[in-house]
Image (cartoon, rainbow, N blue to C red):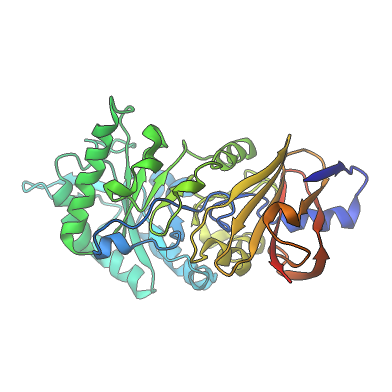
Length: 399
């Protein structure tokens, strides 16, 4: 990897280079380049529960933008927006309700939604009528993170209720203090996994436990389809960069069905400039009814989504670093390579990938995935100007 400073490039040339970043920074969700990590391998059982998430789940979650304001009406509007904006056709099919939907339990221990969700089964039917899937949220503790009813001691009650409603995805959030030992956490997640499996309905199980106890090492064994590897995300470049680049080293756990999860997308929430967006797993967290064309363009980039959903399920990893300049590589099922040139500096910089670094001899064809443009044939190396806090994302095929 080579880089040289260039602070004189201004005007339209710099703007074109900046636009190349589109979402700009880090990528598990957008392209599996950094984050989208399939972890572990299939479990021995061939049940429907364990065949889920062969590629990274794509969809939307209510928390980042709506938090406790989420209700039935917003979920229906979001379902409509997933269809009308083209996100559903691009692969975003899970519509996940986060915390604060929970009401009280009845005398039989069955959970009921609160007044914001008058009929969860009817809501699920509406979401399914759009060819989408509905997700929900709970905690293995007595209370959720927002202080609502958790699932402790009611795992089978809740799993059966979710199945009867038609739920397709469960985010299961450890809201207690870190456990005294890893077995406590393993047991809690195993209990819910077994309860979900007993229903006979395929329900994705998302473990939310902030990377404690090296969850990537045991997540598959407790039935997790994905698990958080970090603390909560926020709409700031420094947080995005820390979360994204810290995924390096987890690629050895990759395999279809089980994913590292560095939290939700912040695309479209407005806290970063155009070159500072982070793509976490492809679970959007913005108001889909008020997206700019630019946000839609980022979220529906088919070239990048194809990398994320590549059937080989191999996680990207860092192959070179020089201070704030990093080169990441993701091998593809067709033998090609996806390379990200990441510039964490505050100035526009030129960066280079040598084909010998990525196992490609001689000449190779290059496609810019953000621009969706074939750039031609290059010999031995490829160089590009990378905007500040940005990334150039390319697909390389040997000639």
